[in-house]
Length: 403
Image (cartoon, rainbow, N blue to C red; front, side, top):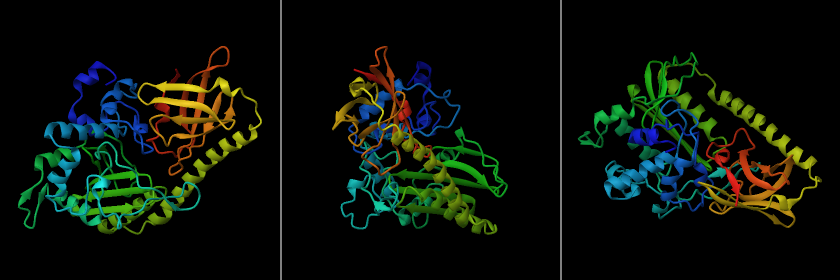
C-alpha cells in the first residue's frame, strides 16, 4: 500500500468495507470503460502509487479494486478460480440455476436483458459490459428468482434447503457481515427515524423504524440493481433495471414504496419525488456541461501550436497515452484502454476538453497541461467535466508525465 504501516496492518476485512484511505473509485480506470488489458498483476501492484485521501480506517470511500483483490485471495487460498468457487460453493448449493459467475458462462443469451443508455439524448441499446479479470466487483449474472434464493438464505442465517437442513455459512459469519465496520453517517429524514448508518462486509447497514435494513446496489453501463433485506420483517426486495441513467431513481422509488407498505406508512409519492430530484440533478449537471462546450465553441478560432502538446505521456499505474494530430485535430488515446480515445478541443489557457468516441456513459473530460518555460507540454492532469459523472472514471488520479 501507500505506506508501510498500512501494508503491515491491512486485514482481509479491510478489503471488504471500503476504509483503506484511498480515494473514491481509485484505480477504476483499469476497468471502465471495458476492453482494457490490465491484469491481476497490475491490480496487485498499483496501490503503492496512490496517495491516501484520508487516514487508514477513518472514512468510507467505495473501492472496487480491493474487491478484485479479495476475489484473487479466494482463488489463492482455495486453489480454484473465484468464478469456480462462487459457482460450486454458493450458486450450486442454493440451486441458483440461472445465475453465473461470469457472462461468458451463459451460453444461451437469447433471454439476457439488454443494457440501455440515454446519454446521447434518446434511449438506445448498448453492448453488454465485457467480463473483467474476475467477477468479484459486480460480475454476477442472475435474475429475480435466484437473487431471492440468496436473500432467503441470508434471512435464515445461512440455512437453506426445504427444511433449512443445510448451512451455507455460520450464524457467527452472518453477524460479522451485518456488523458495521465503517461508519457512513445517517439520513436525518424523520419519516424513518434512522439512528445509524454504516457498511459491513459487502452490505450497507442502517435502521428504519426500529428495523435493521441490509442493502446494496450495483451498476455497470446500462444496468443498475438494488437488493434490500429487512430481516425483522422477513422481507427481501430485489430490483433489476436495464438502464443506468434513470435506474437509480427508479429502484429507489419502487424500493421505498414497497418498504412503506410493509411498515404501514402513508403514500409518500416517492415516484414523483425521485422524478423531480432526478430532473433537477440532470438539469444542474447539463448546465455545467453546456457551458463548457459553449466556451469551446467560442474559442474554436484560437491559434495554438499543436506540436507543443503532442507526444507520449505515462502514468505509473495507468501506463502510456498519446496526444497526436489526426486531420489537424489534437487527439487523445490510451494504449491500455482502447475506448479511451477521442478528439481534443481547446478550452482556455492550457486546458482542453476530450469528447470520447465511446459515449455509453457520461465521462467526457478535461485535460490540463503543464508547460515548461518554452511553452512545451510536460505533463497532463485530468478531471471529468460533468458533476454527475460516475465515480469510477477517476481521471483525477492520473499523473501523466511526458516521456
